[in-house]
Length: 275
View 1 (cartoon, one colour):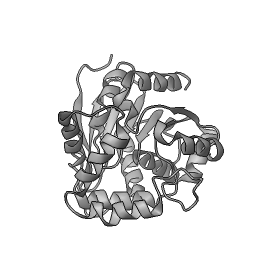
View 2 (tube, helix red, strand yellow):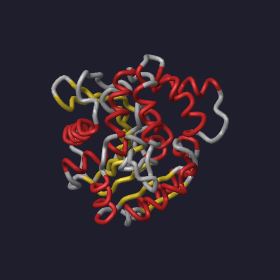
View 3 (tube, rainbow, N blue to C red):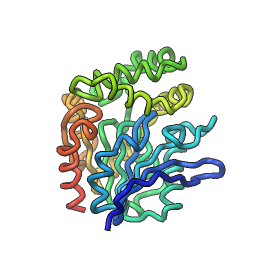
View 4 (tube, rainbow, N blue to C red):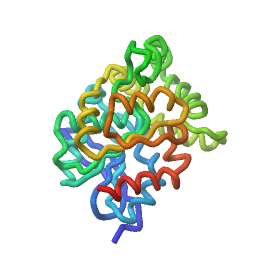
């Protein structure tokens, strides 16, 4: 029987480094991984829904939410190792990894380093495994000039992440008008990550290349990719050409699971039912 309350917990994944996570329910595990600066709290609608049939775990990656803030390890190879530490400590098997945005990089990093033996599926939400490329046909996070400006100018000051995610939330992440109180809630969650960690993770993310890992998953493993509507004209052909075998679904903005939880949850349920 699923638990009726949401538990806030910590697990040591390497000496002196704890990951915070939210947990609810019982059964086969679903592990939700948020994007840059965010907490697993952003998945609260999914935790409430899927914990009726699954053991739902939503993590705060290193440097984010209530997890340890460290001077080193703010990169996605380390995030993959941290995820392995959590999976090992919690004795998770037959898990489905569900990453959002840079949380996809955590998931691909884990698979690249530790394989698929503890998994039964992977779900990635709205980010390419090749975030930066000079090839204009690739699905990337932006041009090299745009990404350079974010990294070297915007995120280099304490107010930078709040300024960046304020515009990103209203222009890219959520399609409807965002009330001031809701925007404040989202930004306060994001700003639990210090600006210098945000910059380090952003820079590392842009230079990640998990294309081969993602291609292997699409060809040999149950894989689902959600794509936001605003760049479907580039992302959908990229996934169809470079990631054959992925189920893919286009909907909403970058935070589609937050803005349209019922529709999004139904798509995920359909994928899980086939595993």
